[in-house]
Amino acid sequence: MDLINLIKERRSIRVFTGEKISQENIEQIIDAGVWAPTGCNNQELKFLVIADDEKLQKMLCFKPFFRGVSHIILIFRDMSIPLSNALYKKSKSAKNMSFIDAGLAIQNMVLQAKNDGFDSCIINLTNMHYQKNLKLNLVQKIEKELLKLIGMHRQNRYSLAYFLHKGLKIPNYLEIQCGIVFGFGKNLPDIEKMRHGKNMIKRASLDKYLC
Image (cartoon, rainbow, N blue to C red; front, side):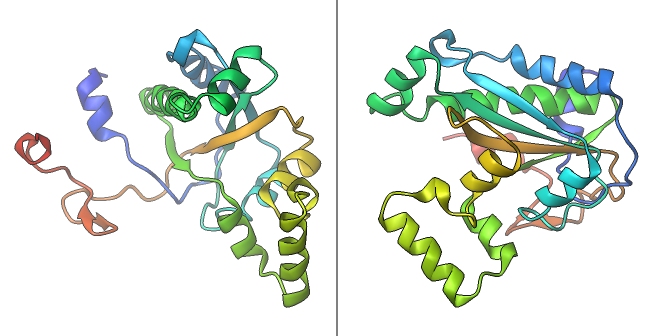
């Protein structure tokens, strides 16, 4: 597909058919992400593919409205790389660079998926989303806050970090950046009619965005 049409026709899809994408296609999507530029050419991004149905169901604790997805890909930054610590921990000017890198990789990946006939949605993974869907009781909330106060956040079994590092066996030096769901969309939005948030999905003329 022509690139500008591909960009304009990609949609964030939240309802999927359950049909599976092939391993070959998933690897091609990740390869597109790998070739995105990274700040200082640090190449710190790592990708975790979740395809197992049981693990996919556990991931729905974060975003329960996603049903029938084929794969979820989580993107991490690798803090074991020497330059990562200097850039993302010690440097005030570069601390957000890995999030920019992840955004560049994500755009490559969702466009590659669209070009191959698959749909996607970029997901923000945070403690807020995870804990909201766990429906913690008062005792659990107190436990969570106490662990946070004494600097033992990773031991909080109600946190995103605990789920990733204990539940999914992610090593501690990998820090979550974002996630993307992929699959075959069931309901494609009508951009001439639909809104998301306060805005129409369809973009206005270019003049509106120039400053």
